[in-house]
Length: 81
Image (tube, rainbow, N blue to C red; front, side, top):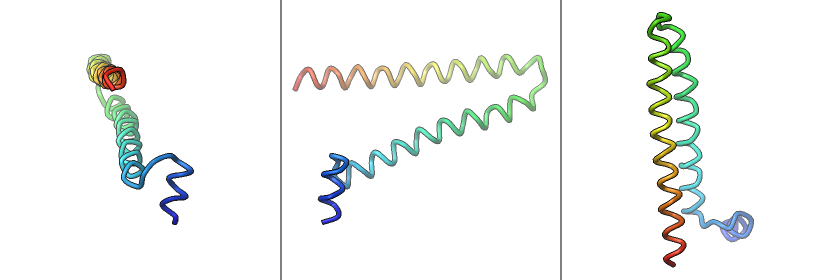
């Protein structure tokens, strides 16, 4: 009965809820990695700090592009269905 209440409340099956939680945890992992990177950046000498920031920015930009690609794939999938 709890599963039925949860699905009625969230609109998700228990399996979908588990996957959603996993996705949220992955997002938090990314956020924490950025915060931890600041600690590392603060330890770098000044001349390397900007290079480190640029490297992280490039990586995050690549992640953003991949996420936008997923959004595009999802939109194409929805249009095909």
